[in-house]
Length: 321
Image (tube, rainbow, N blue to C red):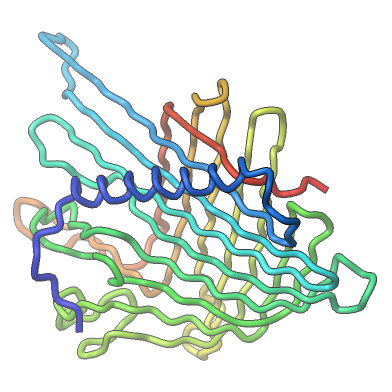
């Protein structure tokens, strides 16, 4: 079982993510600058960014609060294409902090997403249809707290975490667009913290348990390329439905969009949005005065992160055709 024994502050996590970003960026950049490397079937690279925003008010008649935020993002990929097979790997890391007025520092972004996909052509000579298998893993770095109760921990590393895997068919008409359908996919929800599971369960995991396994159908649409000059778009839509009779037809949705607009070689504007819906995740709206639960149940979740700051692309570029 997972139990937190040391105080992990948001600032410690941010420093760790920042150091990881700098180190990995340097390693990839150094590797890409080498002219002596032998030919390889692998291409690898990524994008790192660090964005800031700040509001300072003094004797401002219209009101408002001072605020400051910082967000870091690191996206890595490593692909291998040889003969009739391809292997694509992506790791996305994001972490952000927000300080508003006299309130304590809060997370504004926190994500770990690792995806690995292997495909093999259905027929030799046809490079658009593939049999494929994939593994997708998602979790977060640091503890998250309830908006209604700032001392209540509702998430932390591996609580929850989501592991989805399966095999199916993929149609990829070009290098930047793909449609994949998996008729039989497994999804495992992990809440490796007994306190978060509690006596009522959490994230679909029952009291006394730490995992929940589901068997269902999975669909993924992905699009990633330079849509226009200096504008890079990475869009991913994932849909999952459980084959259990009670839940079949209730579709879990994970829709992510990451847009990077370059001003020059190092300065860029980034916009990240994510829409989530999971029938197993209940959210509550609590009356702060009485503590009464006003609304409870699954809801559509939305997050957006916008910033202007430093961005650096390194390594190879994925082919456009």
